[in-house]
Image 1 (cartoon, rainbow, N blue to C red):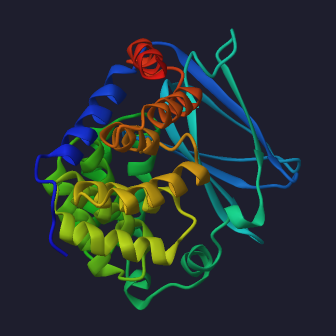
Image 2: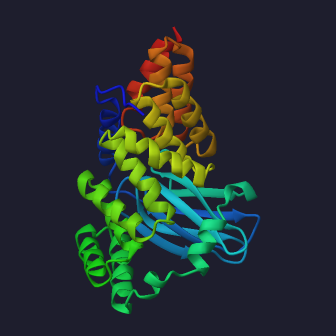
Image 3: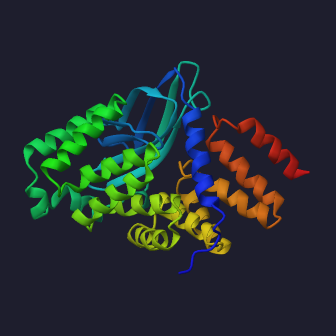
Amino acid sequence: MDARGSDGDVRIFWAVLLLAALARGGESLYELAGQVRPETAASLTLFGATSPFHAFTLSDDSGKFAFRKLEAGAYTLAVYIPARGEARQTVEVGPGTADAHGHVVLRLDLKDSDFVYGDIMRQEHSVSARELAIPDKALHEYQEARKCLGKRDTIDAVKHLEHAVEIAPQFSAAWNELGTIAYQTQQFQRAEECFREALKQDPKSYEPLVNLGGVLVTIQNLDEAWKFNAFAVLERPGDALANSQMGMTYFGMGDFDHAVKYLEKARQIDPAHFSHPQLLLAEIHLRRGEHQAAADSLEDFLRHHPDWPQAAKMRETIDNLRK
């Protein structure tokens, strides 16, 4: 496919999101507490959506769980239930979603359609010969890196991960983690290298596939971005990230009809998703002269992101669009 829209719109869009994410940091710490419904024991992992972070906990038998001492920002919460698979959801933590005591309360009413089963179960229960060859030392380095990410110690996390792949170059998960950190710290060339290596070492792994599609959108390699994001959507049609990135790719290529299709699907799957599909939807509506639809998209965005740094200015924009 021939890429169009070479004015850098997608690159600028991602730069704005990253800068806004950095501006949201603060000294206040929060607690995220919730319950998985229907009530069941689950393992939960919290990832930083725009900055390196990793935390893990187990719920009790009734599905109740808590993560403490969290900085304000967007997180991806992954819920794993052995009999159902894994479900993911974006969670906003900050003054706009917390009560007066800094508690963010989340109730997860999860449907079967929210879960990914096949690929997750493959990862849990089938181990390739290459993965079996990963030495305990490399696995230890990987676990130490995750502990560092829980403390937001990115420098030491990278050191542990780099040591892990030195010991075991076939360690796809470690390469993917390195790529994620590089992407979140705006080292896009390094991120691309790591995601490609992760996918080379495990071509069936979904995470580096969708992550590579994301970094290719960011650097505006739209032809390749289309290929990898299309594969990701085919692999997991219910993944908000894959759909959002597919929409961004089409936006960069100037195909607004297809962009709207995938961005709308991403918004429906996860309205608070950290890729902010509503913002590109609003941009498309503005370019088409659809002011009311643009205002609707921006209002929907603010409902799910009340702590957005430019919220006041965005509300002024919405008012002007409504006139």
